[in-house]
Length: 299
Ligand code: NAP
Image (cartoon, rainbow, N blue to C red; front, side, top):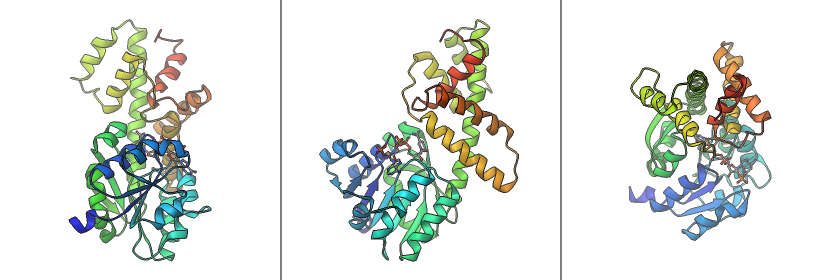
């Protein structure tokens, strides 16, 4: 689709996920203009051929499709509705794809503001982590009108592999909150099992080898096991963002009157990790909190 591939991209948010995703769009041949609140982080992409925009509105003004990958609901609403926000450049023909994980309500609020100016919105949260962003193998959960999701597909193909259209605007975010809840509660189980095994004197490498061939196996357990083995807790997905996602899931559960006791407990332990200066560590640093509850494991 050569016509579509020439659509100009505005990219807002060059964090752990956003920077490699914008890079993959450049590599796929899209003209990309970037904006990031902390300007220095844009330098590598500018050296690779991206243009710089001084504000979200400027990035959207020069683009056919503007993409965001920022932190949470307040941040999305700030870059859309705040001073020099995307909405100032919204016009018929502009499509906004939001790859951040935010609340379904924030996605609907951003979409409504853009639609009042004739622009379109698709929520497109992702799963697959930093490696998925780097290798363009993300799974994308999209919400929005089918024609807008179709238009977004060449962009999705440049940053990910699987695309699932879940329903109207907000449905992608709802799916993401559900998937996150499962992954996050799994991670707590992984940390508890690792701590118990270590306290009981089991060898870590042998435990990890068994997990890979047992019904205990999960992505969260593999990630946690590897981090505990190497002692490297540099963020792929930060404790701060994991906590943010649990709070979004609890808000949605409260709105719907659904009991999610495992998620509620995990949220409290992530709050403890934040209070122990682990906010910017990888989510698997939850291991340290569970370990402290057990009096330490020596790791
Ligand atoms: P990150 O490294 O913390 O990056 C966040 C980005 O958003 C940075 O560019 C930051 O700008 C920008 N930002 C935050 N608040 C802003 C505001 N109010 N105004 C303007 N810019 C703002 O986070 P990340 O790991 O890339 O995650 C981004 C999103 O993807 C989050 O919603 C996260 O939940 C989701 N996600 C992450 C992963 C993962 O494994 N990391 C996986 C799936 C989904 P500065 O550079 O100025 O701070």
